[in-house]
Length: 336
Image (cartoon, rainbow, N blue to C red; front, side, top):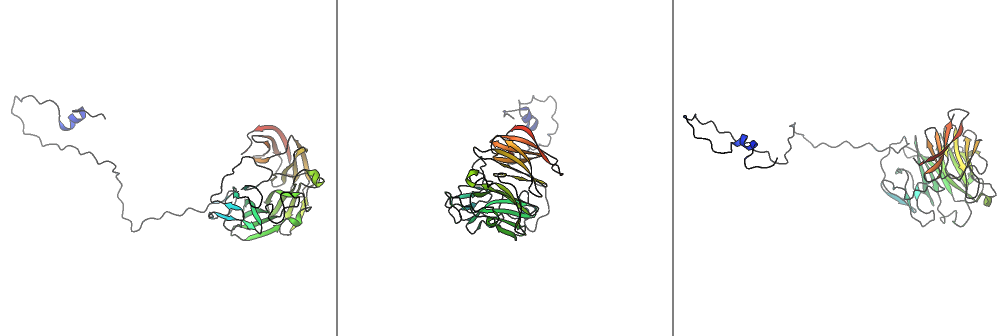
């Protein structure tokens, strides 16, 4: 409200204005004066009264977070480091958009002295960051715990960047209480001692799946590389191994099937449908280039060929014995 020397509002309250005319009759007794209203003090909040509290209330602690996809409820771990790996709390965001050939939860070069930063899911305090010279490389939540892949950096002990010897890899699983369910070096389960590297590893229903991918061109290994392997971690035995040149980069695991692909520079590129029970290759679909990523969708798989572009496949009959992949054309911006 704009201020005025004598507004209508003020006139109603205090009777300001021109002097009244002289009375022509005796004046009645003066009325009792009306007190002017006192404006409230600024910044005053009226609070409903309640019984005084004997002790200050303490907020209920928030429940521990549950990592996405895990049935475990674990408290957040403080920042940790071991070897050349730093695990911030919370984890860092990936510094690069390009996925690369390896499915990894770390950013940084793979040589011994290079600093690596964890960009995957939160790492519970009971999950070791190293195993000897090997460092944590992947961590997937499970319904009853966590599955981990450890890798030896180049120059640490088992392999060199300029060499062709296999680096040391190890898979492990931990239950929600922190107990180690198994820890298995993969050296004895690879089909050869050189030209191989694990580019993806996953676990479902107590079976570990990993690819023993070609380190470089398949001709350097005589074409004997890039099989997909199913490992029984209890018996420590390979259940099955697909033919060579079936799996590098990433793959996906479903109840009855696996979707995997193989491709490399100047080599033919394909997407495969593999039966999970015995590793039999059921389908083979040509791709125009090697897949950078395989993206799981609602009854679909997108083979991402380059950033922002991929080939869509419909997952048909994956809940039965006659599952198949049906090509459905190009899609833009396939990343989830």
